[in-house]
Image (cartoon, rainbow, N blue to C red; front, side, top):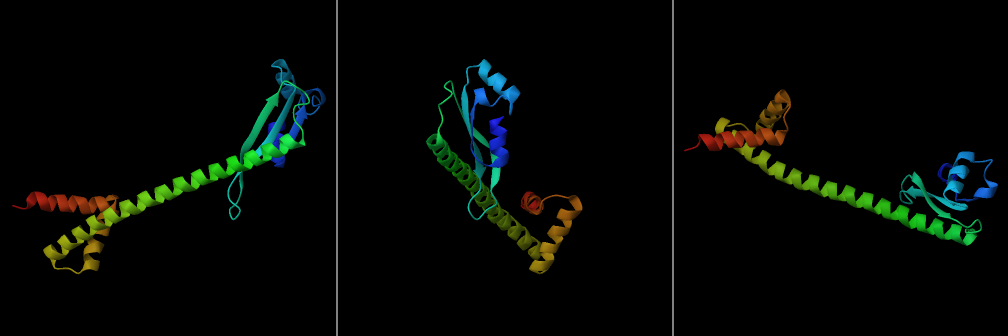
Length: 163
């Protein structure tokens, strides 16, 4: 129906059911059964000016009056869909930024744990920092366990064995 056409063409589609039966017979029949006489569908696009824009669907409004929508309504819906698309884009950016901050916070904690484990290996084996890190990474890869978890295990074993 008009919704898919608006999405595929990326332009608004105004439809009056009485004149659209040949284009979308199933849609028009279903719409008329529930009293819809006109519809306006506007594509919903997300992504900023510098980003690739992605179509996510269409916004649709319906009326029981055949003459309900005119070019002014179309322009209002176009503005509304642009604002909605920007809100969705901003929400995605915020979510991505929040995830990045969380990952950076985890990385800082992980680095601290790994540095303590490296220090313990240096003290125990008299190796340099690069050798200590290599020992941790070899064990991590051998067991397919995150490096931070290897470091925490080592620190826990050392703590349990200390007097």
